[in-house]
Structure formats: structure tokens, C-alpha cells
Length: 381
Image (cartoon, helix red, strand yellow):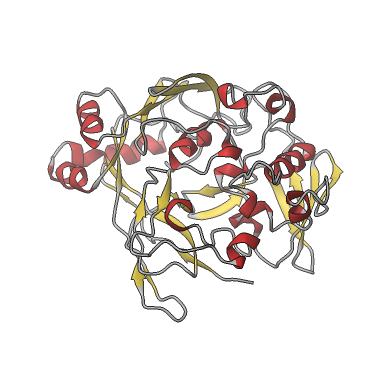
């Protein structure tokens, strides 16, 4: 089994007492206006088809995965299951699924939806990016190679009990929290053009997508976490230019803005704007092959008045890309194709990181390589 490198910062930093208080006493209602800063458009609103950070911002509002990142406690936790019991062999996991998770079409999620979603991802003719994660399930590669119709390692015990058998002794949480492994309703996907009208299990329900401009989503009243989300609506506005985000934020046209290095310095020096800076760490999963990367601090700026939860969870979260800009492009080896670990060989456009918790930089010496710093960069993918 290949080892993963886990880098996480240790302490949280919220620059504004007002922002901290707002999170403790959230305000119900209203609209959150946030930015999608990594490209001039969204690639797709079908989460299975895209690994892009830009698209995942919307996916975190509309969709849910088997596991999720708990930004308050700084760890991966079950999201669509109430409990999981590993067998003594370390390969088989039995999940007791939530019986209160409803898709936005009103239908309750069952084990069939997880089995169908993972099977769809393994359609070898489509080349879905999340196949690298699902390959860890026994029999998934057979489906990918069109040698089987069903993933043998997925077994429905009853509507809300799922048995999963893996090919290696790994923690499945690291494989089934990326947004590209979201659980989708078969009947909605099979209607065709799912990306134009996505249906999910998230705290917000899709309302509209104006290409090149914004995605709007409204509060889902049947979300399984009582009282959440706090906001009535979320608007994700495309703003690829830092200057445009700066003007919009200063004019109160948006409520949150991700800051680049130059903006970060300027906002920290401003007596008022500095009160709304929330620094977040990057939870990085990287393959041992990655070395010589740099890590720089980025910050999320929000207005102290904001108390809503954009994703229906405690704390703010965002997904970033890792860019191996100190490493030459290379051919993917057999281990990368096998999917022996979920983030191996992702290179310039495929490395992933989940943001949440605290801020800081960490050094890690790779086996047989020089130490390096990691730089977490928005994908501009």
C-alpha cells in the first residue's frame, strides 16, 4: 500500500471578533454573495464529470458525498452515513446510511443511489475523473474495463445498509470525500443534460445558471441537518480578476472574496478590512511522488456581519488545486493508473486540497527526496 502525505495546519486564525461572533450566533435568512475566482466560467455542474475547483464551489452547495471535511474539528467525518463498522480483515466496511437525506426532487436517498453513482463513475467509456478514487473498491476496475456490469465490492444489505469491500487496507474517507464522488439520483441523470438542472442532496437547491456570470441556489427545506442552512439563497458569481473582486468587495456587491498575495497584504494593512479576514489552512492529500512544491498563504475575506453558512456546516470551506510548478511534466506510471492511492500522479492539473480549519505551512521530507514546501494554488482548473 502506498503512503499518502498528510499536511494540515494546527491553529485557526480569525482576524475579526465580529466574524467570530457571527459564526457563534448565526443570522437566519438573507443571501450570500460569493465568488468563483478560478476561471471565467464553470466547466460543468455535473460533479462526476469535473475535478475543477471552480465547479466544486457550486457542488459543495448542491451536492453531498459519503464523507466530508469537518472544518471545526479538522478531520474527515461521515456525511451520508450515521455509522461505519470495519471488519477484522480491514477491507470490508458496513455503513448505516442516513434515512433522512432527501434529493431535491423529494426522493429519499438509499444504498441503491450510492451503488449507482459509483458504478456510473467507473464507466470506462466516459473517463470520469473520480474513477481514481472508486478503483479502491473490489470489482470497480472490472466495470471500468467492461468486464462486469456491477461492482462486486458493493453490496446492498437493505435500503439503509451498505457493505463495501476494498482492495487494500486504507481509510475510505480519503477516497470518498472529493466532490467528484457525489451521490446523485439515477432518475434525474438519465433524463439527460443533468448539468443544466443538477439535483443533489446538499443544503441548497439549484435555481439558475447564467453562463459566464453566476449560479443561484435556494435553501433546501428538507436538508437533513436541522435548522441549516441559515441563508435563504446563495449566489456564486464568476470573478476571475483580482481587481474586479477587490472593487466588488469594497462596494459591498459581494460578501466574501478570496484574496491573492497582493490583496492579502493590502487588506491586512487596512484597519477596517483587516477585521473581516479569515485565514484558513489547506488540508492537503498528495502522493509521495510530489516534491519541491511551495506553500503560500491565501486568505478568505468576509464581512463581519455575515453569519450564514454557505454550505450548511460549521465553518467555511473551499477546495483548491495543487500545482506542481517546480516539477517537470512527466508520464503517468502504472501506479498512477491503478489508483493505488487516490491522489497519486495528479500532477499540474489534478492534485487536490480541501480548505478548512486553520492556517500555516508545513514541511515534509519525502522518502528519498529533498524536503519541500507545498504551494496550494487555485486550479485556474
